[in-house]
Image 1 (cartoon, rainbow, N blue to C red):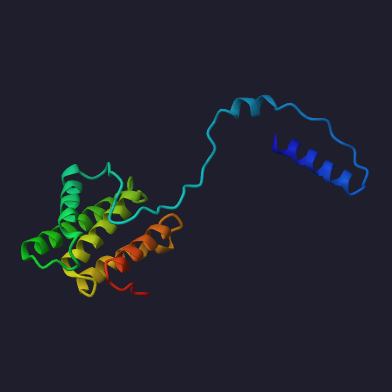
Image 2 (cartoon, rainbow, N blue to C red):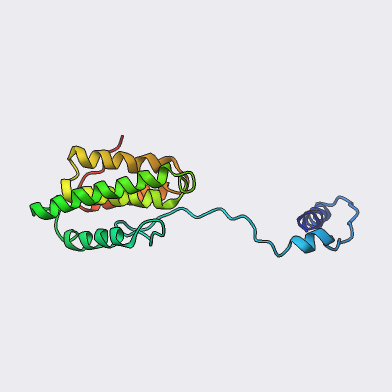
Length: 177
């Protein structure tokens, strides 16, 4: 089908340029092409670019962990990072550690090592650490390194840039490595 189109286009362009070219008759699709026409085509996945701290629903992680993350964000996003409440800061540190631990567990699994959920868990852990520890802390720097690891991945590069924009928008400087 594509070859037929190519030949017709080439013949049309060559006629315009003044060259005499024999035009091949249009070919009907072969039986194989007809049988394969219904199959879906491979698609290139679009880059991820959701505004942090939002994450899509995660199917490989339990709902309680996602609910705790959402509840933590609801409490801290209105205040500048790091939070001043000690109990909330400890909850954020524990949540960040748990999110990263879950990401590492999924990343070490052969079945899920290439899953997008690993990145979302790492980003969530970094955001929880941002609010719990602040952008200038060693803890946040460690979590941020995990996020920056995904910067070279084609699909994740836009999301890492969105994460950096979010960190900058919260009043924290973006550190270039």
